[in-house]
Image (cartoon, rainbow, N blue to C red):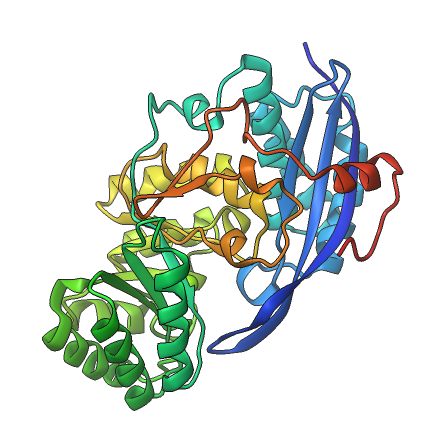
Length: 384
Ligand SMILES: [Mg+2]
């Protein structure tokens, strides 16, 4: 049996190429946590936490605090017994009153990485898929002026032409006229499909219905889905929009955890769920959300926070192995100016879809200078 011999936790920041704006926040950096799990059999697993309190429920400070308890409890455990690992993490939650979905996700993906390496299999195969499903992947444009939106769309069409870009995702602001115009300007430039994400911006569901119907009249099924139209947790509003618009409505912020997903499924409040490993608490919980979604006939998309190639790889293995996934939004590594992961080991972006590598585990390799920092065992505040 393999045993965990050490767990190291590092903070790292990566400056974004340009600020990324969504309806309620503007980001300038990736501000994440790298988790390195070593075993007594020389196998090493990598995981990443991407905390952002309004969405994942934990700040980076809280995530690091939670990880300090987790490290002590997990030493000596078998990392390939993922159910036991999660049981222990739940015990820590109960004992400390702390909860960090993102650290749970980081530990979970590091354990899957080790499990894959031990069995010499990529994680998607560990999850039961013979080959990865091919699912269109979006590249996201944040909130910008109409002119800047058009410019960015042109840039992406050029930059990702060889990747066969098929879908663009647009963040909505909640301003009906701006949102309509920005969607239309991209729809004219690009003959592919679109997904939209309101990030809770439409407080009044009737306004959302009006805008979405108008867009549906113009673009029909070219709009594949719309995420989180109304304030988080207000499931009546989401359900109202869902019942009055022909475009599938997906819950994102309102469907953070497994418990949230159960509530949405039972209330029939959405057509689908955006699973993010960082909200769910890792692949283990993502699989449980996928199960409940299937039981209630909900579709899935798999999305991301601002993540490096580590967590994106985990997302891609997960997304391409489970059923009912109609869209992925696993793009944050592709637009980073610099990744801590060797770009050649990240999942491919081919024919408009992310494809996991066939290498064992998550398939990723960290860059040599990142490995040097890990070996020096420094808990660094800013790697980049
Ligand atoms: Mg979203």
